Image (cartoon, rainbow, N blue to C red; front, side):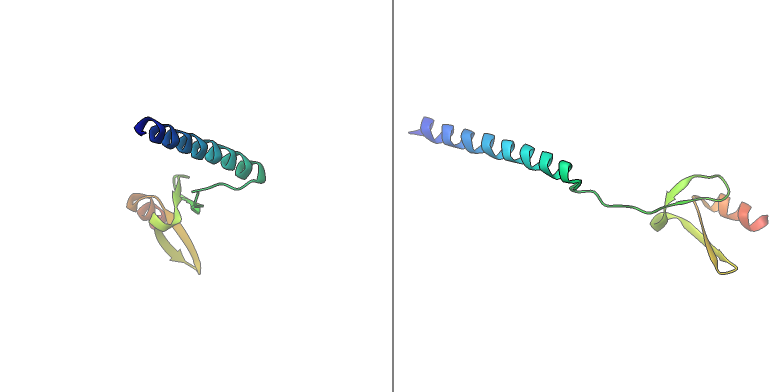
Length: 80
């Protein structure tokens, strides 16, 4: 009886794994990507490093907002 139950559980696990693989292939074929979140990157005008806009330091001058990777780059931009 226990052996039969273990075989049933094994078959369910294999079937679920198979279905997840097939589902992933179908999503990829359709161009869907699961679990990805786009993060907007901005370029530091001083050193050229790309940094996530949410974690970048910013400075607004003349109505334009500039984003920086560090306080050092922001200070260099202010000085120029």
